[in-house]
Image 1: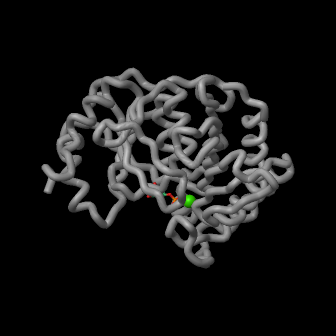
Image 2 (image 1 turned 180 degrees about the vertical axis):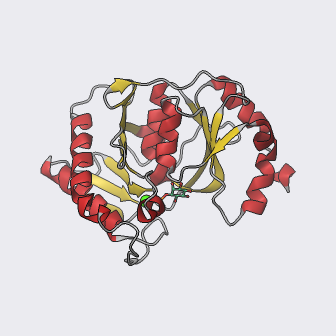
Image 3 (image 1 turned 45 degrees about the horizontal axis):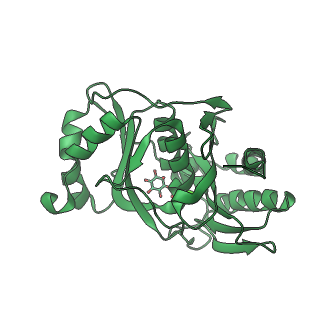
Length: 279
Ligand code: IPD
Ligand code: CA
């Protein structure tokens, strides 16, 4: 793929602008923040979410990019004369609850695609806003952490693996039974509370897999991290092993298994019970 626009530079500028504009909010951490209505993704909007989204939009405008924005907060918005030339899907803050509570794990996620599907994402950035670590990927050109190439883990044993598992759902009685075999066999289970960043942990081998089969996570949360996992060499599919190709829309939900390698991915899929069997 030939890139006529230096997307890595533009996404880095977006990230820097988000960090700069968020600085005042760090002083308010731990204080109650008013909700500013409900975002396009269905969750309450906080000031900090809007400030991060505006930082991204303003940066793209400064670079004179025409684009359609797909944001967890504002939904679809067109900018410039050729708004359909590219689509910018963002979750301005992934892990807002962590940020509000002072848990140091939250991120900004931005994906650029040629169409409104996750398989057409060609440039991606996820940045850990607390630690300052940034993950990027360009389609066909690999994935990077702070500019250095990354590869996922080769671990296939569930005894040794660290596996992220999101069970954050009121429908836990429906979801948990599908996962008991996997939990039973896995020694180290984690959930940190910002799924885009947790997928990047799979991409760079910090963890070995991340499983979210709730059917609740928005496409806007995973658009960038999905390319980062794939470009690093990891594997991501639905829990049935089908290719993950969801529409880029804040209301579109996804369920998936992301893993460092095909071996552990296969094992995890074999342990997840299909919906009907778990009933
Ligand atoms: C949330 C985080 C969290 C996951 C939630 C997401 P948000 O993102 O990724 O880990 O359990 O389902 O909504 O709402 O902070 O952007
Ligand atoms: Ca968010």
